[in-house]
Length: 276
Image (cartoon, rainbow, N blue to C red; front, side, top):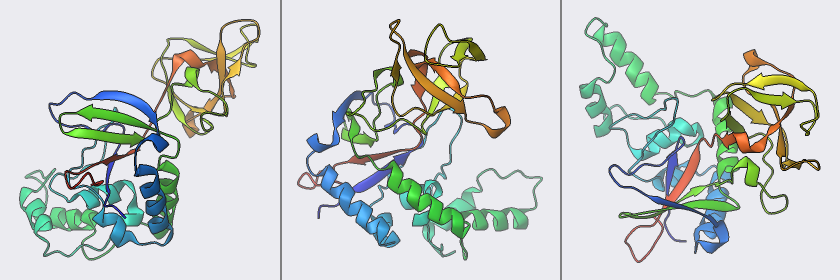
């Protein structure tokens, strides 16, 4: 089995200073990647977390619109495990990267008690004991399996080579029943001011609510519904935030963009074209 490194991003993989062209391609057209993802799934199901950590790329970038989690100076596997804690392990205080982070003192303020600060830092790094709740660890394992690309990946081409990220979904308005997976459960941004939410998928249906630009909603449709009396495609949405509850209804799919977070990305090394 060829070696693959996993690059996990919260929203977007970035290569500093290099523009990358993007193209949505079927996973089956990327030689060897589909087979590796099957192998990776087996490792996770076997709870072989050591093997998972070995495959995480050293370079690890995190970027998302509303912040993200990334510890500068930590190895790639640690930042990966902060996204998917099932891959975490107990950290030894004598590891070089731990000492370097302690010396750098990220987010430390001079008015803080240094001993308490270092204690909290070590706890967050998982030094001596796991930082994660066992129940959440299991949830993250299932989440990782669900996040692995199965249908399409986004090919990002740049001077450093090609990177493949997925699952690469189409925009909600371009979703095709039978060709694309269900969109139910995905989150989306509203891209229109005063977007009407209607009781049924039709412009003749009563308006039961409105959404503002950059509102986040959860999609409750498997696929868009065609409007027989117009050129609209409708998507059923429901509340994303518990405190922002509203009656589910239909909005025009063309005014939504998916919030894909996280994405799992793969790249190849220079070693005889192996994944790495």
